[in-house]
Length: 254
Length: 106
Image: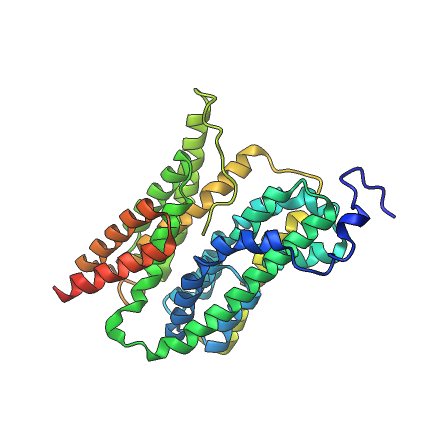
């Protein structure tokens, strides 16, 4: 028996439904999982073009499970050193620290096994949906989180191999190696929800352009660092005079 | 890339990603970050994605050297307009690729 000061699990609420998937969670995840399908497909295509061994590139899906980071890894493998690949991937995924921080309160009331397993499926979309349920009773939150986590993990791990199978059949004239660039351009624009984020993207892009000639794709790291610094300065600058710029939205896509 | 190098990259990135996602939940469940850090983390996504897009768009096939292809730049611009307009990744991808095919054929 736990002495939970927070919402108590009602027996009537959970009895009989405990082991079923949450229907609300299924319908909530539908609009978010559909756009992930072409992304996973493009990643599958990129994997077949990658300099990485096929097994390792494929394993990024179940083990890393982060589209933008996976696409980066398989795309720059072969033209960047190991440390450059690792730092690019980790910088991209560092945003998940924020998700972890935001979801820490509801996980305080969850069993240890879920706390260990939950991070494995904590992609952007899962975070964006789960953070809206922070105040639900622990049992409902658990069912909701597990359902959306399973949906995204399953769909992703079906779609990526599909792209890997179809990839080699598509002729080179389709120029599908350009598809990841278009995806990243779209993700960049979707991620800009506040002015400082726009400044971060603009400076990041310009510094990356200026540093494009550097070997080892060093421009990515330089651009990212410069962008984050510029964004922080813009944040500071905008926060001082007016109090009306507090409309933050959780769950940036990408 | 050798099998050993690929395994190393895979393991380090998987472990790092897990720690980013689970670190706060597992270790510091009762603490929050200072607002400055939380705000800075929100800018990481846009900054790194923009840097990545530009680097991939302007670099040559081997990854070093600059190689700007006008048709690709125009296709990216069109994709960007569609991204802002439709706010949908599928439309963005379709617009960018179709634009590239048409422009490359001209």
